[in-house]
Length: 288
Image (cartoon, rainbow, N blue to C red; front, side, top):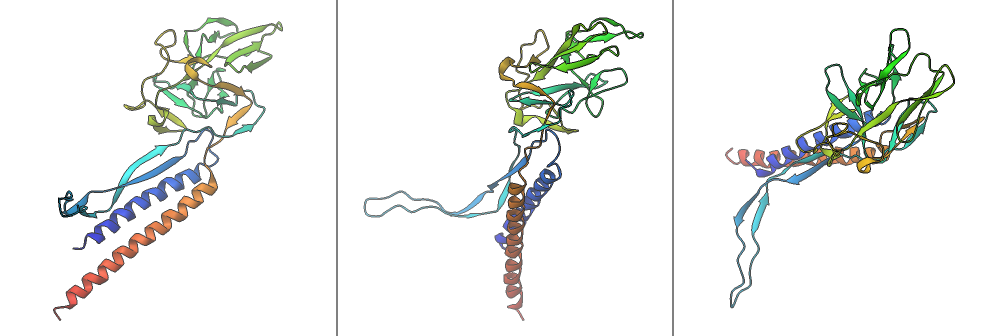
């Protein structure tokens, strides 16, 4: 069989993957905090029919004769560049200017990280994500059954906005404050952030969330007092903006261009297979 057949097949598979990634980017063009994907290719093995020779006294050297055997998928990258900010003027809409992630914890105690800052209050006045994971803060407060604040919570955990609060706000350093029934300003904790040495190595788990992987590195903060988590500005993390949401970093013009390139690349590889098939047909017809 002709080597070009298998080269064409490898190219078709790779461009199908590129179209899959491009389609996912376009589908998430309006997803808050979404980071686009990118596909890169590399060549496969090359078959050497003649090796290179060194120059001799009366003869020049020659280069190797090699035939490539197709392409392969080199990587599918997550591009962690900053997305543009959308003004919402809603207190619980948060964005990060710079590096870092918000930290969420589910009911099983598993932490995940996100750039999507659309948060809400649940029935218990916890600050939660759209899927109900609790936003992690330092020194949050708790509330008793009668609505009275019962004291300071753990160093790392959730917090509540007391039902008696007249209003609340979130500062650029993540400090949550509220005005109590007496008109006094009270502190409800400080939003914690996560930073890793290789953000592009984080694993996507759906719902705009990431988790640590073997190549993301550990959390950049000291183990104490927040178990590797940090507050805004520590270890190079960015500032928190209340009333803004970070949009997807997908550029539609770039994605449409990549889609055209992938489509034409797929068509070119199908042409390789068609041409190789015609040559094989001619060989079969030699015996007639």
